[in-house]
Length: 186
Image (cartoon, rainbow, N blue to C red; front, side, top):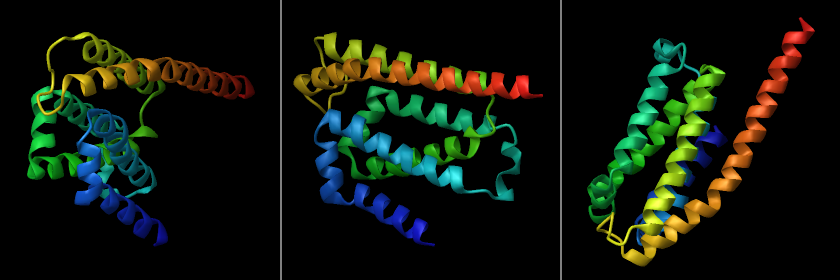
């Protein structure tokens, strides 16, 4: 019970107007703090939630597809602009990101290793390509923010990508080592 109260409290803190306005005011805070935290909140709750209502998600594919579709939709600059400029669209985005994280969290344990790896590699490649685009493009990609914020976000994404690449290599190596150990124990 305390878990749900803490989860709801943290979610409400993220979407309250003072905190939300602060995070939405800067492109880097919006895309590197608020969106990942909403996804993480959803992921943690989806990972803990086991209910027969989602029995059709037996291999994790429907939740995985929903997660990827949601991320792709909110990566479109027009969608991000609408979320930054309209409180109603911003609220929809908050709930949509939390639900997408929930879908991924509920599906993650059911997904095969190659599919998890594909998602990780796809995510890393998108972070790198967005970093290059945001830092090198001389016009605004998202009209709700200025060019300095766009370049700052691009630089942050490019600085973050080697760390994520190393984490991906460690995760993949660990997973393959555990699988090999389990295989040899049989």
